[in-house]
Image (cartoon, rainbow, N blue to C red; front, top):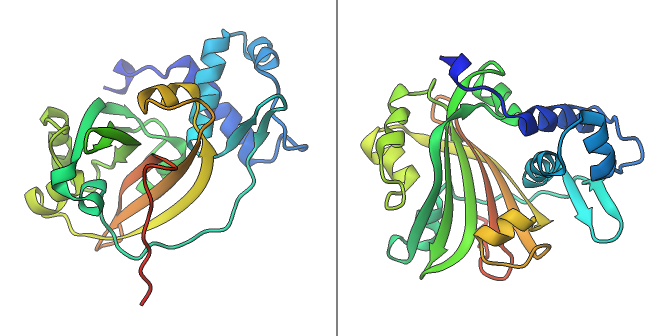
Amino acid sequence: MRDNYPIPLYYKIYRDLRKKIVNGYFKDGRMPTEKKLCEEYGVSRMTIRNALEKLMMEGLIERKKGKGTFIKKKGSEEKLSKLSGFTEEVGKERVTSKVLANKLVRIPLEAKDKFGLPEDALVLMLKRVRYINGEAVALEEAYLNPSVDVRILKIIEMDMSKRSLYEFLRSDLGIPLDHAEEVIEVINLSSSYAKLLDQSPGKCALLRKRYTYTSDDKCIEYVLSVYIGDKFKFRVIRR
């Protein structure tokens, strides 16, 4: 089955660059230029840009206009107090979605240890643009772990433009979502994400990374969400 899902070239480069970043390969904190990366990997500029874009989506690198691409330093973290999905946070009557992808893909490197799966395992990816009152405010890229409950694969056959993912997991499948690890940081929108969200490239946005766990401490979801900075805000309640 896995042979039917060849790894895209940009993803191979992304994995290689990610390992170099994590292992501190780029000592000065600066990434090579796109031209140098094209020469090093023997690929087109578009392939390199796709790889870099995935690294930016993870919050590992950032582009500074006129200066280049740099390894992003880790910032401070804030904890949010309630485990809920986008629809629950905003209100069902105001939320609509456009599904960009709903399919099996190879597991992202940053999720394999949390999911407890091998590097070539397949997981379900659900990628959606989220709208509030008809206005695009966020882009979500969720990876779901079918080893927790194989019924998760039913999502592939569903119209997720009209369903809440967390509502389906909790109500339809009876999976108890218990807690999550989250990090929120500031990024600048890449050109492709800006286009999907009808914004200008480089605009300030919030990147939210979440690992969601069941009551028996199994990681069921890894999700990357990008929120337009002036269209969405979080409220934190401390008790």
